[in-house]
Image 1 (cartoon, rainbow, N blue to C red):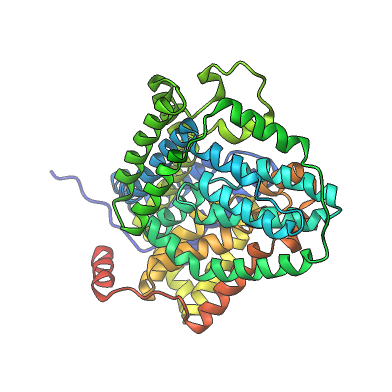
Image 2: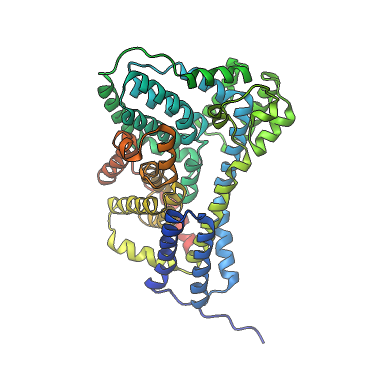
Length: 480
């Protein structure tokens, strides 16, 4: 006798909200106040969602299929994230990033310190893909110059944070820049290009503010000891050669000519390893180690004492550096898979969309969601992943391209976190730059003006991409 299949029923709104509300409250207290890791909390939330799904008539096989489908949809972008780990490790090994930093420090202008603080921090973040690394290296040097000049330290710190997150936001090497397309279902370079609509105007406003404020600052200052040490040790460790810019040009060319992302990154990584071997004289064995474990000064036999500033900058990269982010993605996708397959997310979305009628409404709802998660968890990853999964189908239903969602996630998720005093980013910037979060917040102009432009464009329709008819049809068929 054949086993009778369980009868499935549609969840109520309360049943759809329970796992979402539990996760939000658990993350608020667990991550925000107790400092727990987010991954176990998300898995527990998925377990609670599973109990509700079981009560609705769904078997473990049904839930497992939902989890696998969600993780499978995130795999292409996850492979890009792993490729980024390869790329960063190889660029450190070749000396590409250290050379850009070495010469970039010389560009800092005492007269227009706030403007140059923003620009140099932005360049460094674009090249390295890390706002924290930018603030912890060139940011520290700039703060030293500001003290010597008597320039406002909160204003300088704000310019550094704004520049660092401008670069982090647009860098293909950044984990959040890769995470947003994963959450929204868009493509990496498409996502980066679409962010220019809100990020470039925010950058222009920032530079105007910094230029006007900085007009009153002038004079000369002795180069801080930290800058001298940074440049001296980098030149001792690496050899400088213009050919080291080749990997950067390859990535730019890949973006311009829309070459496949993963082969371009992997090919560039291998070229970078060859440059490290032939220009720097490092061994291929250490080069391959850099791809997996990341670059470290210890592996090249440098005999001098290396400062913390230098090691913070160049001891990074490798696939191992992105494994934590990968685990977080898989955990979130597991939770999303269960609530999606059991129809819980659809019920919540139907209730939400019954109140939200316009494009502006859904974008404002996304911004509010990102703000909420950012403030209660202090995590840029979660402020992207949770709202991204919640609103992904809603944007499709409203005939909005996924890149609108990924852009909004970064506009209101990534850049708001360093303005939250209790977040890891806010605490890091405070300790690193020596200025409390609440004091540099007004001067981190880009971090909040990008949100303002996002809201303006939502109401005016400027820079809002619609779905092509065939794409919308495909999405509808998949849901059916």
